[in-house]
Image (cartoon, rainbow, N blue to C red; front, side, top):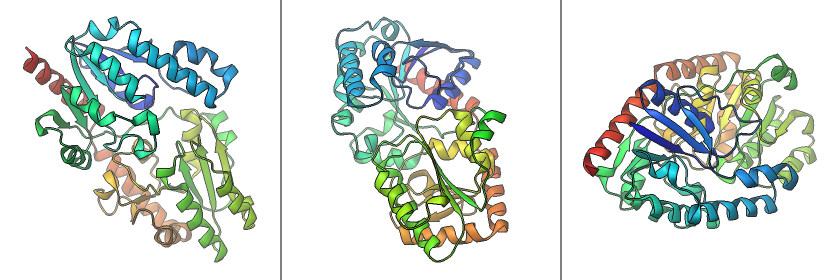
Length: 381
């Protein structure tokens, strides 16, 4: 069987790499089509091929244009033209094209229309609410794209139920649980770049977006700091929102020395270094289906604080402290025992590690995915 995996923007590189490796190990001829890799990526193809099919020109201009509006416009133009007129040979000359992410729905529609009928089309719906309702033009028309696929893969019943509520046919939706992931390990140099904690440290890591609730976390931390509790807050990742007012509020309150920021696209080892040095990992999301960040942190054995949404809502009670989404006061109340008690942190961290070890493997995921491919190909035949 020949499969092309598509993640044009390499939005979930660790997920793509893990699944493609497992598919290749299971005997599937797999090629990952994405953008040219960057120094912050940790993609090392093993048992599969990697092809920088998308965004070649815009990525070549990235160092000169920066990450601002001009770069995004160039990327959008290149992608749109490529979807409308570019080569579709790699996508059409295969058994299955499996899209992980659809980065620009109006352009994606043109590409899918050109490919449909030539090969089987599969899409992993990582979140039923495309881009968490925060994408504007980028996600406009995403729901209509789902009708063009032969099969849709989701990672849990939350996403499946959401798609059914949107009118998708149950027979096209397949649930394959998301295995834990491990980022590239931190080396000595990476660990040296992250300061050692002086007091217990809370870490928020990954891309910083409105739905992830970093504002709620900062509000909760300010509440605890003002009542005399001593701990640090570290923010590590690339902001996709204006966080300057949030950081200013911490400094204005007199707690700037307790705030650690490492903002930008960070390498996997750098993120791993932050997780190694943190005492508590916080996921105060307003909404989510599944969280790759959470699944990449389990093996660190750190206590987790999560919201009661998506996959978090179904976690066993002992695995993580859970609070009502969107409630900063509840977040502060749940953080307090974690900040104050090393014993509670140790117990919750051990439960998190054990939970990760009990979950399925990427081999399991690959075999389930191959079964979906075969069912789609059989139906087409």
